[in-house]
Image 1 (cartoon, rainbow, N blue to C red):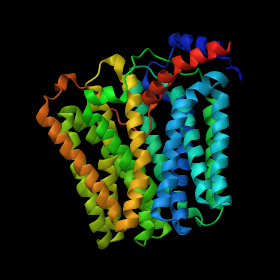
Image 2: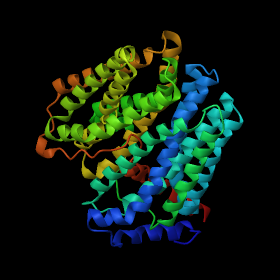
Image 3: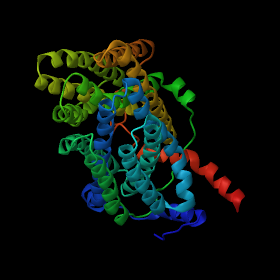
Image 4: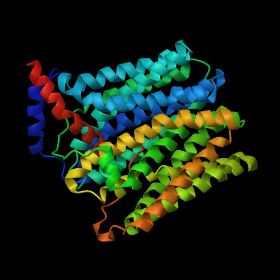
Length: 445
């Protein structure tokens, strides 16, 4: 792949990639993708470490929960902006340059946090980090998606999900290597992000393929599947809030850095263990029933976390694992439920709309829940999460009473998906922006 691509050769290369012979078996696809998965795993180590590190450091520096929530939520605003703008930038300058530039920027941004402890500076750097990480996801996942066929894509993306969660979970444990008030953890995060570039760039193949897709707006999708949109908004709201404020919660109830890292890791471990069984249940029964059941159980598990904290630290870890194992798989169920109501050519565009719904929740959640924490105390974090998921469960029950379920033989499979845009979602955003970008570039010519 040449280092510099104009838009016309890039589009020609994209069209030719339709006929490129891809690995026909899962083992062959995995063998051709191991470097991408390795690099992404390292990137997730850095991502997992930096999120908890910044939340803990903000609390130690005396930031209020509201200010911490504002800082952390700016990452998700940057992520949404990056998801929309990166495909346009990529078409103009090429995948390799975009990936290298965004990795360098995100690697530098984390170091700025250590140099200047200031709310405006941290907001700006988190916004930049979110923008860059969206670009890194787009490029890496596009290459990974391009290595798969329809027969191997589900298993390959499932493996990618496991790598994502293991990386994020292990990143929490790296908090134990140094004092959050010192420089080393910030330097380590920067190193991990920089090193992650090496296997990803060395394994770079053809750029992503754009598939035909009809457009569908967020409002149109809400009319088709209100529960899918509400569920995705809830998942984004709660997931972003927990990863932003979970370390703050742990610190304020008296956990040390080691136990805080175990607390956050437990939620990720619970997700890895329970996502498969929950997805299998959603394939065998009415997804609305499973969604309602899991949402209500998530609300109860959030309340159990409050009680467990008063019993013992080990009990809190177990409760946190149960909470994560129930809360985070809702992302995959909501995607599968929405796709059950769509034609095949609507799914890619709908996936992009779902990402936007989740992203809006992720932007609002940390700030809203942080304000509640400042007003009503630390334990109000899990009380608020319980209320949100309880309402979501009741809404699912209400939707069950108003319409017939999708027949089981018409339901598509539920593929385990990490709680950030997967390859299909990224592809939809690229499809959404590609045509407009091409017209802009034609005008420039």
